[in-house]
Each structure stands twice: as C-alpha cells, then as structure tokens.
Image 1 (cartoon, rainbow, N blue to C red):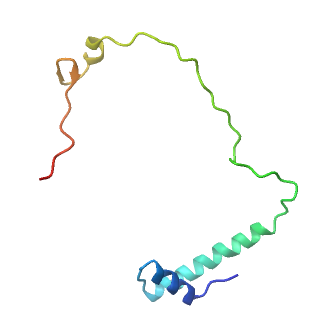
Image 2: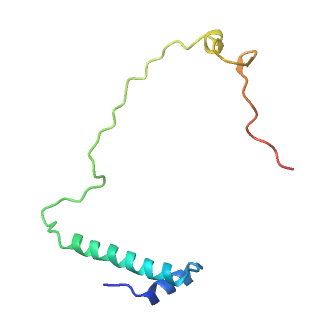
Image 3: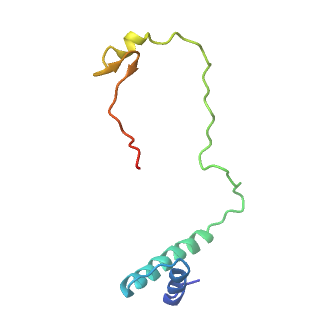
Length: 98
C-alpha cells in the first residue's frame, strides 16, 4: 500500500491543516517509508508467539505499610529560608486574572 500526494492533501483538508508543496511532498515520502516499514514487520512469522499486554513482564513490588513517627514541625522548618508559624513561606505562584 502506498500513499499519494492526493491522499495527504485529503487528510490535511480533513484535519483543517494547510501545507506548502514542499511539506506535502515530504509528508508523502515520510508516510510511505512508515508504511514500507510496517509491511516488513508483517513479514515476520509470529505463529508461535503469544500476545503480550505489556512488552516487559513486571511485578508490583509493594512494601509493608509501617507507621513511623513524622518530623517535628521545628525540624522540618529549620532550613526553610522563610517560614510563617508552622508553614513554609513561598512566593505567590498563582495570580487571579480579573
């Protein structure tokens, strides 16, 4: 299967995109290269290969949920450049647009 420039123009029209002649030619060549590669992949014998849901078999490694004491507020804030009572003081990062 190959794609023609007319096919690319039609796809671009459906997507409401405009391209110059050079881009249309480039997209046509690129898409044909991709399709040729897919054709090569279709030649591979996969008769005795089981389908995978994921390419790498992995197991979840959960750890035991152990309750530990947390930091004291004073220890957590001791290296903070600015603090306000029991909180880190940071510059405002969100502004309200009116």
